[in-house]
Amino acid sequence: MADHLPTLLFAEHDDASLNPVTARALTAALALGAPVHVLVVGENARPAAEAAAKLAGVAQVLLADGPAYAHRRAEPVAALGVALAGQYGAIAAPSTAFGKSVLPRIAALIDVMQVSDVVAVIAPDTFERPTYAGNAIQRVRATDATKVLTIRTAGFAPATEGGSAPIQPVDEAGAFAGSRFVGEEIATSARPELTAARIIVSGGRAIGSAENFHSVVEPLADALGAAVGASRAAVDAGYAPNDWQVGQTGKVVAPDLYVALGISGAIQHLAGMKDSKVIVAVNKDEEAPIFQVADFGLVGDLFQIVPELTAEIAKAKG
Amino acid sequence: MKILVPVKRVVDANVKIRVRPDGSGVELANVKMAMNPFDEIAVEEALRLKEAGKASEVVAVSIGPVKTDETIRTALAMGADRGIWVKTDEAGIEPLTVAKLLKKIVEAEGPGLVILGKQAIDDDCNQTGQMLAALLGWPQATFASKVEIGEKTIAVTREIDGGLQTLDLDLPAVLTTDLRLNEPRYASLPNIMKAKKKPIEEKPAAELGVDLAPRLQLLSTTEPAGRTAGIKVGSPAELVDHLKKAGVL
Image (spheres, rainbow over the protein chains, first blue to last red):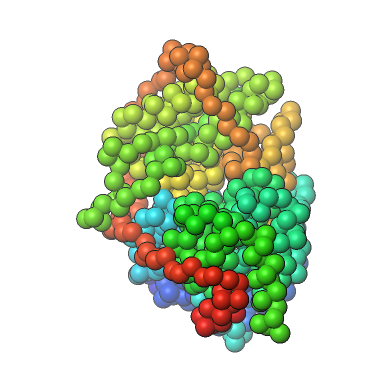
């Protein structure tokens, strides 16, 4: 019977706006073949719900709006998901920090084994997912009646706009007193977001300092209209903030163009970017593993090459 | 307060894995194994809380077949006080099942805090901690990068998309570790020797009353589509020409 039930997709959003990964996850959710309801959970989240209603293919938007859902703590949001679960054949969310925190909690409470990081929908019960930092792709059939899925959005094209789904309010379920929101430090940037960007410029340990990220990496990114990323080594060294990390345990991206500056290319980093359409690497070590996946390589001193490249890009864009 | 740290035996992070040609899985014979790196961070954090006088005992637990005790022994060599080995016939127990088994251990041990790695680097699932918290009805903080423990609560800074978030949780609670929480210590030789005398309690998984049957059928395991190395270009100007031709500028 679960085959005929609709799919519930958690929207990724910040109340005021819908994160573009939602449109990508929608493409995966629609591939299951059932009508898709998008659930927007938050406080004062109507603008995000209105944006979700405009995505083509959405049958209905559910809006759970209230103080209990402020900051989307995992416990109350999961309780809401559990309350709704009986009406759905599948529950999905993008593999974001939010989706990763909430969906396993729901899965456990409805006794379902989750399929994490779906990269391909083969059939409504059969999925492909990467393991071992993307070095082995598993094809699995989920035997639980309800499917719980997180979606690795980089592999799915975004659904287009043009829909006008109704927005249905849903009642609060499951207050949870055991955790409290204390605070948040969210970087605001005029640059595109890493997981949604068409072009990404990333820096590695060889960048050498936070100042050099600012003076070398960021100007190239801005010339290209790109998001800025970093390797784990650069983040660990304090050159770049944690949310810039691309890799197995950071963000997984697949932009049209990925420019790796001073990144050697550890398998954990490659796991996060090797599905990019075109990869450019700049590195002084011509044996660096990054060159094995790069379409175009430039061997040399990045502190000389990158400013020249930035000037050439500016010239080309004229 | 007792801290429980679940640890997993996985293929060493530095090993380049090989997919079996028949598609049945990843070759694990004669491959170097190690403790999941995120679990090392979990052990380290538990030890630091104990050294700061915030915890009385650190218990490492692992679930798996023969040789799983080696991974528990690694935690003991780092400084954990004792181990629990939930013995199974096979490796690769699914996160949902692991969470149910861990719930039984939590009920028996009564820890005030459970610290797990955020994900294992073999199956990359990122589920077990959240599932355990759900089954226990406890609050959770995933992707912890900073922990400050109080009398009855714990403040946890988490790495989230776009930055950092701080939550205050009532104890008992479940945490999962991110990379920047700490840098795990190496076990010293004297501590490795001492660890050999520390107790590891063995519990057959079959006796814990949890259904071990997998819910996901593994149909095949394949290598990802490969990427071939491209060309080296001589100058930034040449690179820009290529990028224009590729249509990505």
